[in-house]
Length: 209
Ligand SMILES: Cc1cc2nc3c(=O)[nH]c(=O)nc-3n(C[C@H](O)[C@H](O)[C@H](O)COP(=O)(O)O)c2cc1C
Image (cartoon, rainbow, N blue to C red; front, side, top):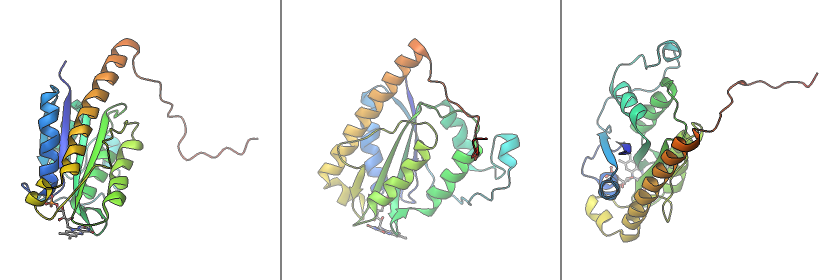
């Protein structure tokens, strides 16, 4: 069985630093027999979530744009990679609006789909941005794949990233670990199915009486 990974690049630069880091991952994922689909969303006109509740009834976002397209690919995928440049110490605004709507509007289970996030900065704000991206996975029962450092590259241009040898090495190790995790989860799913998840409680604080 071929595992599939959806990759989102939040950067407006399709040949920029984030893209260079993701390319390194893609090369290794292909070597590992994993199929990939890359969406560049950084130049899309992506508005934020307006908390209208349309998705609760309809299972898709009221704004019918690339978010709904990505949702179908995400549902079919075994893993999701999120790449983002760092803007003022956070992931860029476009990817955040995209992810808020993608995760909130979709009703399909993300349980045990493997997540990995990658950030690119010139100088700083990388680990804070990395933490923000990983939170989309850890609220969705998605195991997070790790590299051999926090998954970051440094640079202002793709040429700079080329010189970040440890950053690129981290991307390769991350891709191998992600492929391994997807295979391990797939095999265990075949044998024993997914672990039970309880969903009975939502903001309930029983007083014990
Ligand atoms: C609006 C804006 C804000 C930025 N803020 C930061 C920052 O907080 N820290 C940093 O190191 N680089 C910052 N940068 C630089 C980019 O994060 C960095 O060059 C990144 O590697 C670009 O990735 P890309 O080529 O994939 O777009 C900023 C760039 C822009 C356009």
